[in-house]
Length: 231
Image 1: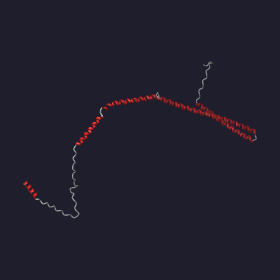
Image 2: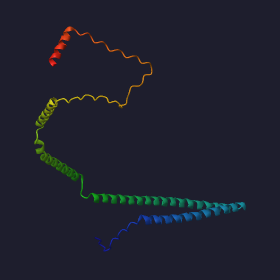
Image 3: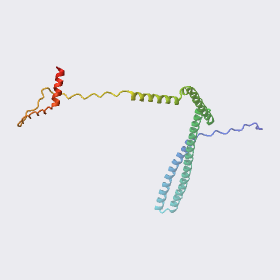
Image 4: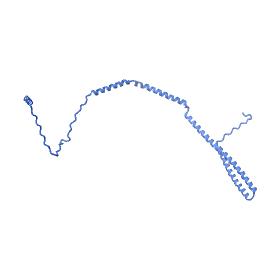
């Protein structure tokens, strides 16, 4: 509390970087124009010194050179001030870029946080555990439902029945009669008019039939007996 009844002056708000950079650039422009003006004075002093020296006015030439040196010192001061302003402008521009970058990063982080909501790693682990638990329950239910159908038939019994069917089929094949083999059909001549070709050389005479063998007495007596039985 102020005992004298006067309010403490509030601190002035910090100027914006953009406004400060504009002021510095304006001052820098003023310094550049003044430096150009001083350079013209240096040229004028140098010309005056040369003219005085040509007229053998030694004191006048020295006075002109002293002014030239004074102007050159002022140029050095102006150049130092320009370097200082340039460095301040560069620092403010860098700071402004950093601030804008920070704002962008903060905005991105806020957007990511808003998208995530109240999700964290622990909640994700809980959800994954719930999913795995539900999957296990589903597999157990499916297995319990399909178990009666699997236990309905015994595989060993079905295999024995299949072996009996195979044995019965083999017995039927062995007992079946073999199929009759049909004789091949005689070859049919290509045409009824197929005749042997005419001989081109001399035809040999046909051989005389062989003489019948002489009949014995027993055979003749048997033949006569058979003839008398047929009469």
